[in-house]
Image 1 (cartoon, rainbow, N blue to C red):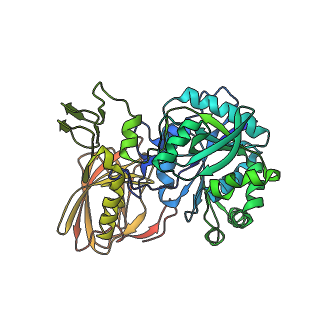
Image 2: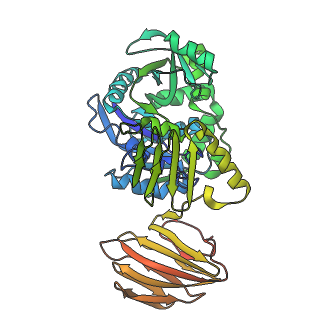
Image 3: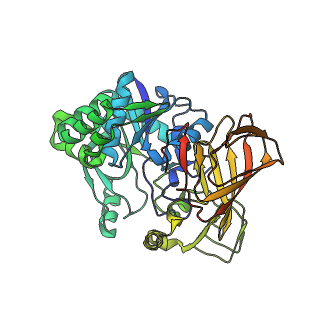
Length: 479
């Protein structure tokens, strides 16, 4: 039996702002290592000895993240991943249904369904639990993994387990987040586990169950998948059909109904104690991070002086923390957040206020990733903007024109192929060119090293929506 990873990467959480933004959420960030949470999830079954693993993960995500997900997978050596693009967010049950339909194209593997934004610190324990779960899933059971609780946590949903079955326990029920007294009772009983959101089952078993309980979801997903259009590594769904798909979670749509409908499949909980966290807030990241003898955790260029139990996450500059205790400090190029460790859930209130004020700080970072590379808006003022642009080897921007701005390009590294009106020419390091307002133009990197330029824009309007695209390698329409 082959195990295939299904990675659900559609969320855009607000509780890890300002590091996480809607267009660059936490799963794309390197929070616990040099790899992003997505990359850590994709390699979680490397060196797995409990069965045969399909090395091509199946990722379900949305249009906005498609290129950076493909690039991050390429960086860790994943070749030809399958990336299903949802035109609308419809929760995890439709996402898994689409993944199961795609997986059945190549057989009937056991699907290991993982959110892209979780942390696992004990990989050996994780893989041991997966080996137990895979044998149960191969026998036709629907498996969920329950995290063995080590405290009376009120921030997680729970799973109640019944009698032992194989390497797990019967799935009795899912329960919502409890109050403190109830959580303490759950902890003492030994019958309750935290709901990890990780599942295993054969693709055909999931489809049979979703058709039994939510035929409307199954029908909409089949129609959307049948109307798909392959696009390189991406699978584009038929938009109209998927728009009609109801939204529901794996838990609500199927798993919690199994106890009353044994003909649809057997629900099983496999206990797991593997240093799991859903990193739902900054204090949760502190809890799973490596710490010094005073309980401080730092990422980036950080200095601690007389601090205790403090997390500092530095992205762009040196951050020196002096005399801080139980604090969270997060630095990015365009925003800094400081919070007490007991108040990190309130970060979402800051995000809500910024949204209400129409601030773009909730949407994107100063550094923005594109399919051809990235750009960083390093300075701006009235009628001008300065960007640092890096173009990957062999990549090119769209053939485009601007109505309201002119541009100056200066090559600082690599070789640029420039289309400027009717002319096409090369620019070497320390050479420059001027793109007049209204001129058709394109920037490309014909070399084997990244191309880096400084772009100075000037004009009456400098927004990213002032682009008329005439030709685009990446299937983007003109804004």
